[in-house]
Image 1 (tube, helix red, strand yellow):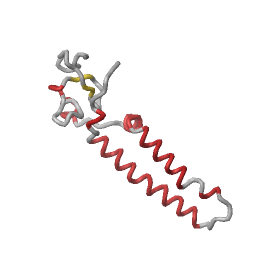
Image 2 (cartoon, one colour):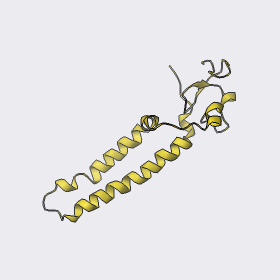
Image 3 (cartoon, helix red, strand yellow):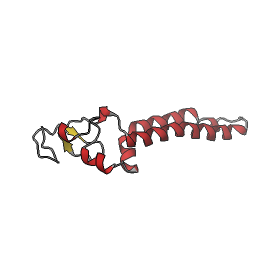
Image 4 (cartoon, one colour):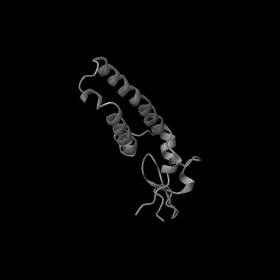
Length: 118
């Protein structure tokens, strides 16, 4: 166990999703996603942190886009309207991903709040 960065308790077993400081359960909010300091300040993730924490989702969306949309323009003999459909499909794939990343930055999933430090 580590020491809590806020109250100094020896039971710092959780990590705040926003400031990434070690905190005890007394210094966490009831939903256990953030520390009380981040909750009071209504701290949000920056774009760099948001991308860093959601790498897996971004890789999946990139793979999905490459698999579903990108090969189309490389196939000879397609209708020219296919390019417009490719752009629409790319935008439609990115809209839900953007919403997920935005709302996860406000209320992160609780499973990410408890991590072990080595």
